[in-house]
Image (cartoon, rainbow, N blue to C red; front, side):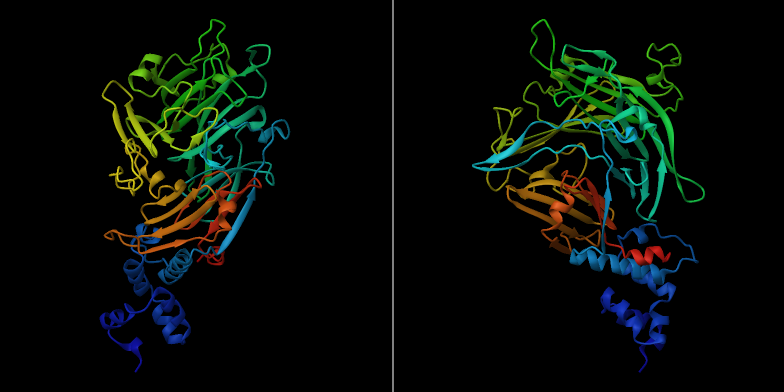
Length: 501
């Protein structure tokens, strides 16, 4: 009996007993099986049934010209490798970095806090330096020694294009892509004035670029505006720090500087400010030190909408002083969130004497304008079963304390890649010498537990966690190794992509 001749409804009921891998393999049985199992309407139905959270299903339209037989092959191949935890390809991209030459790749990253974890004779990192690369929504931006410029890499299509950040006269401090906006924090390559007999001050700026897809399918990086992030500037050292975050419309910066006052003040200098960066402007303060051509309209270009004094920082209980616990800043449409973190095993030059019983995380949301602050914290009074943690560990929101960091205590979740739409989570955890990268797949929205949970190969930790950062989505995972290379784990079959399938 030829089952391909059965009525569609009955034939589809039989196919429900086959795995995606079997559906692909059975295409090889005969020409008739191949024609039936690659039929567009059937494969579209199979995608909806077997991979309802996949990117292809979420972006599904009524486009009748799309070859859903090839789409099913690509998605089934991807999830086959995801479930095994074995990438189809590992791509490595060298990073360009210099302090003097070549001029276009000069970089002096903002130093992390001097705090690490220690238990008996074992140590492990608690903070990591910033990466020279940034990723968001399928786009990777990095300084390429091969191209001798910054490169935009569309990982979905595999296309790369160089663009100009005018970096020859800049020292890049940090880059970050988010919500279609690339923000570059940088300083001039020449000092502006001498701070004291040992230190020089460099004027610091941020520049925003709109990253947009053009009508021909390529990408453009277009200058939006530029603003000064400090009225005098910062020395280039490992003591003065600033933390920042941005959305498509706002930018926030927290500054922490060693006090160099000749009058004997000991407390560090701290400041928090929020900018509206939504308005484009050709004005560049870096080219106008005296401010003579500054626009008369204060709302043109990037402009400060709120500054916080010392007393404001004290009022919101976010002033860091000499034992800082600030982890990062985050933003939403109306608040800046100051996220702090401390751990019972923290030591180092900037470690606090007041450590928590286990692990404490807190987020403080402060409105852009006047209004009450929001606080959410976890871990102040813990026990070895972390029963103090009542938050849902799968929630990722700036107004919720990041409890995912102690989800598997005493393991610390260093970083994670979360594709919430696809239900794919990759977590990197360590407990001193013990290191593990785990992958969870929740293939349907109504599932309370992951359908698949596996551990990746041990050798992938040093390939991905050199800077303690993971990015990506269901198609690929991005990290950095100790050899100054961006490492990309591809779970899509690159041969299918290159053939346009």
